[in-house]
Image (cartoon, rainbow, N blue to C red; front, side, top):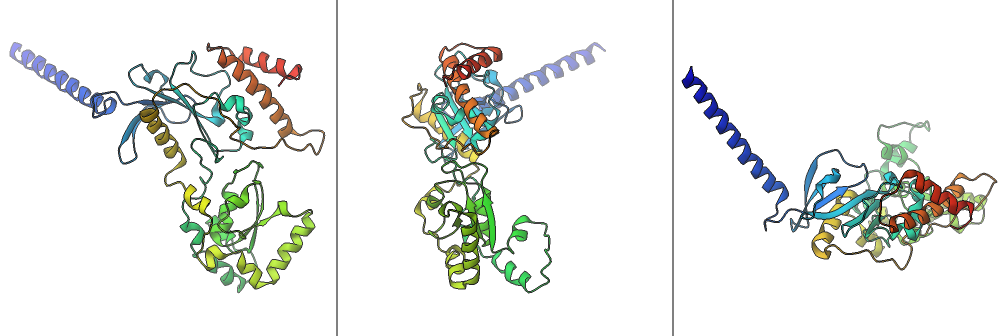
Length: 366
């Protein structure tokens, strides 16, 4: 019996040693780079990824970083960056007091989702910005267009011709692109009119070979495949004039085909469009770009930007109650409050934030 107990203890000891060695190896692989230094850690400060961690390897494995949502992972030895997802920022929740760790914000959506970011005071709180604006540090303007081949691909173009020979009754298909490809014109209205804010509402019609009737980004002409790829509502004084233009295009095959050079001639002449295509998922592009900056730029203090990265004109008041207009005004006051409170470099409560921005609002001092 004594011999059995000794063997059991010996086996237990061996298991413990083996587990310890394995844990050390895992720790070394995860937390140490090839030069024996801890991998830089990028912490998603806002809720955005599942708990745990993952390793990213970027630019042909030249840069590696640890990604996590665990706020306690950043130490002096592995300090990298705090990542923020714009739509989930809590106005009282920031890593304060602030040290020299980079702050990077990703906000690919409409500024309506987080109005304070519309204003330079809030943008200047972050070392790195990634938004739909071309003036961001990491622009994701073309996040909804995977590649240029989609624009030139003709696989959807014959659908309209085939269906037009059948019963005119709408045939609902499982795939959206197949469904919309039977239409010659498709309304493409964005939910915000900011410069460079271009979503799938534009790209879907272009991909299937339809002509977009577009209303949205004032800079849309900078991003079209060719000069004449869409009917732009902003070019007409009335909706009646837009309708007359559509009717004219529909009745003239030559004019109609002139809108489809990207399909009929497989031509994309827009150089800005060509060079701005993202070759990875926007989030992966953002994380790798921040990882690279940690390696190459080190930990630097933020510098104020010379211009607002956004150009989102204040909405016109067409009626007494305009929630978006009110949202815009509140965002301006909240932006000023953020700048003031974070500038003090100490944690603050939600109540103090509310008191501060409401004071600015009541005093009309935003």
